[in-house]
Length: 279
Ligand code: C2E
Ligand code: CA
Ligand code: CA
Ligand code: CA
Figure 1: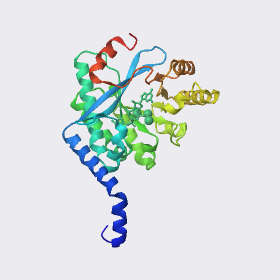
Figure 2: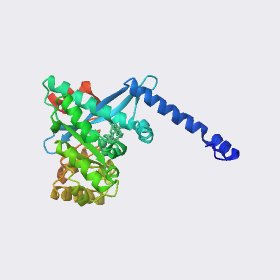
Figure 3: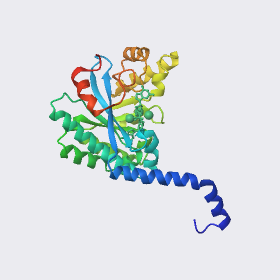
Figure 4: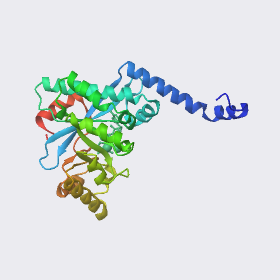
């Protein structure tokens, strides 16, 4: 800044200007993308590990960039987080998901619950429950058809605020998923106190399933404790038949991953809802 000595300023400029320029550019482009509505939701079906039926889906945002095509959220969610643009993107995701569920319902499709991802910054605002209420109502979507995924780290704020917001979301009838479980530091008993409904075990643990006895034992322990505490378990990142088979034996409730289905555009979902995934 201006209070720094001249030499310091120059050093800063020389070493970081490129980075800052590209970050500023990304921020500018993201802002533009929001205004031009260049985002679309993909949907990844989840399957009941027991029956093989499609029982829910996860909405995953993509940016349709005019030059680069489909951009992964990994490329822009971190920047959206630091700039606060995630607040607008998050609300937009909520709106799009509700509008899509409504459209499928109007088509007479057997719609299953759709979960959306809520980022830490968005959650910390304490307004997710109010926004959910608005969009569910606007599109006449039953709360049972929309679910929310939150990471453990997002729930690390002031315990009272966290409890109040989670409680307000649940009071709407919206189920709560713990996303990427196992990558943070929360215990299952903490998560039960927060009344989380679903535990989504991070795909790092799924990928260990076929490799080692320990991986399997670890997963088994999570499943039995989660069940004992009244939570249901989803395994993410299921990529092989072997992993699926083990997860079925372990009593995991739902499975999600490339082995079953990749995230797909909304246009592909009606066939999945009507015919399932086995063709
Ligand atoms: P996530 O919430 O953990 O979502 C799962 C990610 O794993 C998705 O990546 C999905 O495509 C990918 N995936 C699914 N099955 C498999 C598999 O079998 N193997 C492997 N290797 N990957 C699999 P995607 O769509 O690129 O999203 C990445 C992350 O971006 C998400 O991770 C989530 O943290 C974030 N994200 C996506 N959409 C949103 C959103 O609407 N809001 C917010 N705040 N974050 C989002
Ligand atoms: Ca997720
Ligand atoms: Ca996840
Ligand atoms: Ca993840």
